Image (cartoon, rainbow, N blue to C red; front, top):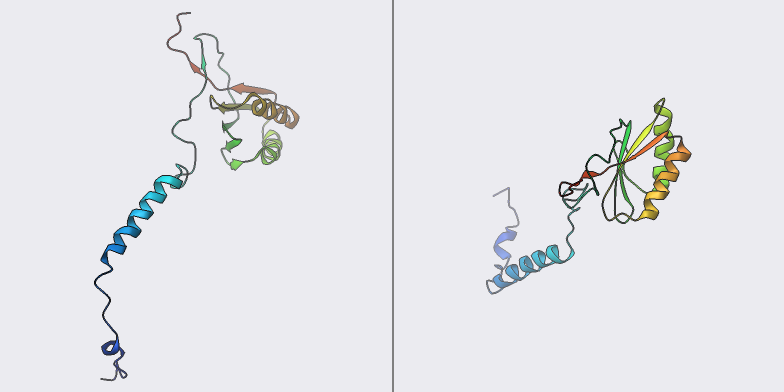
Length: 147
């Protein structure tokens, strides 16, 4: 036959049948590595499911409109709406360009409960240096409070 002139497939040896167990070992190791070294950010990057805002007593927070929003998590993870994941230095540049876009720019900082006060003060300083006239810290009302 012209399509198979050398007939190489007849000279190949069949695959060994005693190595079927190796497939299950490989599959088991893959599952083990996904459980050990997996991250909740691998399949869906963004805020984790454990993002919680701090609680405030009812009637203690005032409503204010904002022009820009950022979300901050522990470890210096900062998400800006059009900018994505930013470092603190990248956030400074983003804040400078965002402040020029509005006449009276106001920033809403949605910081998780476990963000350090040092990170929050660095963000506040960067926003004030960029020209934001107001900075609003996001919080949830404490439903258990009897005030």
